[in-house]
Length: 254
Ligand code: NAP
Figure 1 (cartoon, helix red, strand yellow):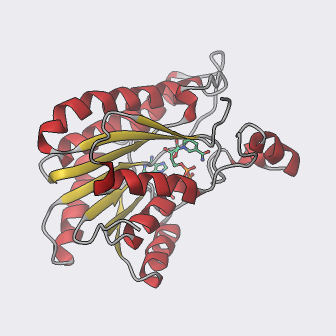
Figure 2: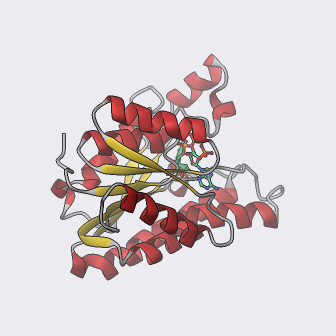
Figure 3: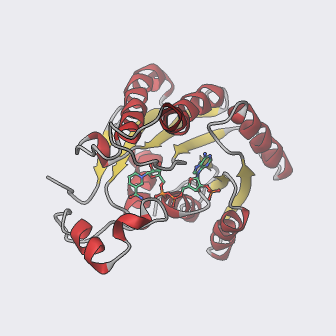
């Protein structure tokens, strides 16, 4: 277990799925975790309860991303919550995880779908980082959750793949810019993880087996597989890694 005591983390999209797994793991490692979510309050509360049950500290921050004024609103709520907890308005770890897919091949994708996917997967992380830089302490960590869809062709989710590609370009550019402050910026690219997103893809045992077979380990990923990698990138042990996209797909389509 890493040592994140005294550190504060913001995990976007932490009410469910991969984000919940990351929030629980960072809290178990000692961080105070801001559990961000869009609308599913009960799920977010459950994340915070699970963290408390394990002896960790967390609070909720609700803000739908990809809407006008989203980022300032999120930080206003974060700052208010930090003040309530007697903590300074500072961050050590920012995990850009919130997102969803609107599947669509080139013949089906609409301008609205494209705008929404870019807004949540690329625009929101960019401005969350821009507005967060003043709060991010020296030696901070930024982890962007990308997708294996930037390495393996997914023509059925063309706009989603493009949005994740933009997130990886952001990762590389900022790693250079923020190095002088000891801040690392990395991306993690999951493959098939059993969460609510894309649930219809593995809705039957046959479909699940087909996706499991794409990994060299013969199974689908679980949220802990991704959270462990993010925890490493959030820790001091990863200080010499920056600007990288870590494949976290279990060797899908190698
Ligand atoms: P999930 O279980 O569906 O959870 C999505 C999370 O993101 C929820 O906390 C949700 O909040 C939040 N969210 C969604 N849209 C949002 C918005 N517009 N504004 C703010 N928050 C929003 O999804 P997941 O599978 O854990 O995915 C997490 C990340 O991993 C995503 O970036 C996804 O692209 C990436 N990823 C997933 C897989 C996979 O196989 N699952 C593979 C590769 C990459 P609410 O609960 O309030 O709705």
